[in-house]
Image (cartoon, rainbow, N blue to C red; front, side, top):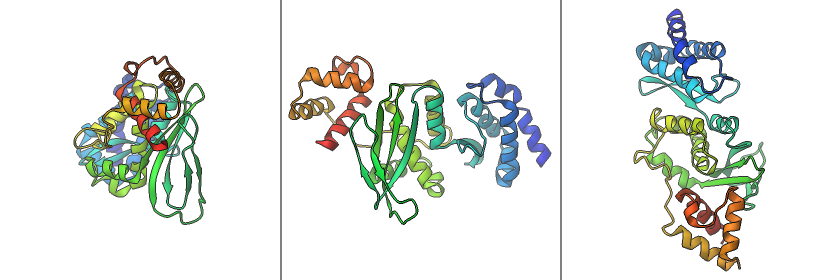
Length: 285
């Protein structure tokens, strides 16, 4: 079986090399990582031999998305799922892609537990999160993803446990990785939602689309937002800013500074950006 797996992987060389999105992802190394993954997991190996097309697609996606299978990096893995082999990208892998492709400078995603001390410090500041790593921190109550933009500002997206659970309950993979790797999936869910507010890059979009569609991590209703929409986000933003003594001109100056582009009216913002700002202002109102 070992020789069959080596042959299967080596047959993908031309497909892999033609699909490479990041030259740092080299066939010589990734093919060996793939072979090692198959040889260490008999069930994965059998799945690949029984469904070679899925194994081929997974290996090609390593190149097309531009992610490494190096187990030391913990960015991506070949895993058996629904009778086939798929490329599973971790939440760290998504942050890595965003950083390598220039969307962000760096980022982190953490879960917040009952005994933690967590405080949101504002739209353009990193949150204050204190906890004892070596004690019982209690149950998870939520999670957040903080990234530093190329301009040096911070963006933080938060999700409560209820919001994470809502994504889990409507996910096509709720009986798969959500059961066996809940914390990993929770972090990945927060990162996916946070990425909506970062500068768009094709590699990250491809990675998230692949996870949602090809690996079954998306939602049954294909609506990734999974939270209730604020019906009139524009009015809410204006009213909260007025209550703080800010003029409409000051509002758009602040929005321009926050998103690092000229915003002269709400027409210059996406619906996701309006929801993001409205939720943040509402939480602090």
